Length: 200
Image 1 (cartoon, one colour):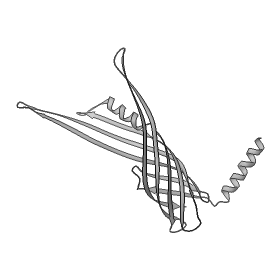
Image 2 (tube, one colour; image 1 turned 90 degrees about the vertical axis):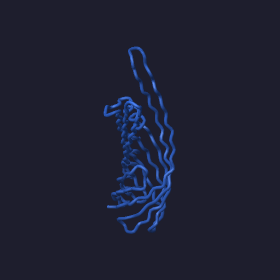
Image 3 (cartoon, one colour; image 1 turned 60 degrees about the horizontal axis):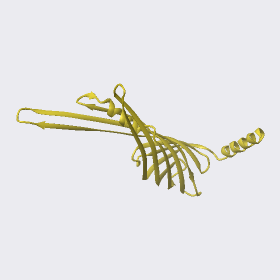
Image 4 (cartoon, one colour; image 1 turned 60 degrees about the vertical axis):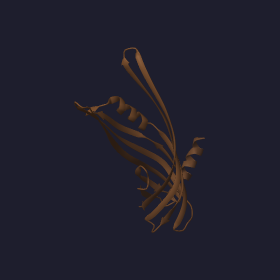
């Protein structure tokens, strides 16, 4: 049995070696969350690893005016999400224009901060971080890649990505009294992307 696995591995390695592999750098500024990917081309098969990155912040200021005085309060929140993904695309055809199919698996890491009047709001920070972190995703796409030369191409595709996750947060505001907050996420997104691809 071990010899069969060894023979299969040798055949796979010979097939990959004969496919004239090359490294690929893909830059995708068309995505909602900007990102890039690094891969290796084996014939029409291109496995890829990449990272997408997004960041945002907002501020809310409220003011209450009375005949005697004025009260104001300011709330700030900022968040960053990092989405590593692992996947592949398969290029069809032999001319300059190659249609392709792709698939990817994603995972999210989030960092967040909330402040009220300059003092960190730990509860808000934790809620945001829990919501942004630990979500799993799977994506599918169909597109085309036009090769201007052997080393450079332009690509565009349409796709669908589905994210799923859950959070559970516990707060003990006094000994023996516990608040439990549970959330679940199911989010599907269609997307249209374009990218620049460099082959080395």
